[in-house]
Length: 360
Image (tube, rainbow, N blue to C red; front, top):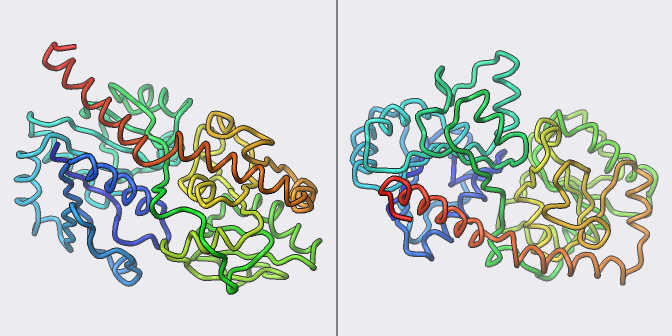
């Protein structure tokens, strides 16, 4: 298939989780002989922090103004099988207007931020990538989050058909590597600063760090405020994707914390969860509905609700630690790779064409 994507970014992982997801999915799509065209607005903050310039098999079209590529975008859509627009795409509505004029392709909206989108809509806040009529014009709405989000995308935003397309990992990039002395720690957290994660970060990371001065705690990620409590915490501003395996594999354990709106809806595994598991590091996570759909508590992942929980886990034996990390890695490689997600994506497209043509 020829697939056209209008997304937030694929070239920069700075301050967002979209880029690494798209890199894994696009590589898997290319391996399966699909052609990919990715339109990305060339904004300064991603340009200044770019960590991908090209990828074999994909054409990345960077542009500064929609009008300069409108004709090219229209030409690609007219000659493609699938068109995808994502949440937070700066020109989502303009791309949607073009896409809706094309009868030849499957029209898809992929909301990688569905709980955030729905919370804003329910609060009466304008969402610039959703038009006033909702999502009813699309053939299929994919959601990074499952559970109630799929129903609310139908009920609130008029989506005709919804399916989950969860986060995933590229095991060619995320796998066990040797630890790096610069990153070496007992407990790590990799994530951009977010106000709605701060309370859990304080409980599950900052408090244990203060109570365990003999342990090394490390945070990697951008946009942390100057007044952040760094006591007994080493900080790395923006760990680029090629360094993620070294960061994880230098950790005794790593922490997963879910954005507030996503945790409330559940069924919301972040890509980082699978990346860490694929690298073979045991994960301590906050709790949310549906987590057991991806990993089994106690044997593949450790759930923490308090600083005492974290401290208890950090005192596990090496045998217990390694048993959990091995089990999570095995589960991830079987069920949570980009290839497995792409196979599901292909199935959905085939179902659409079968229904359209009447062939089953």
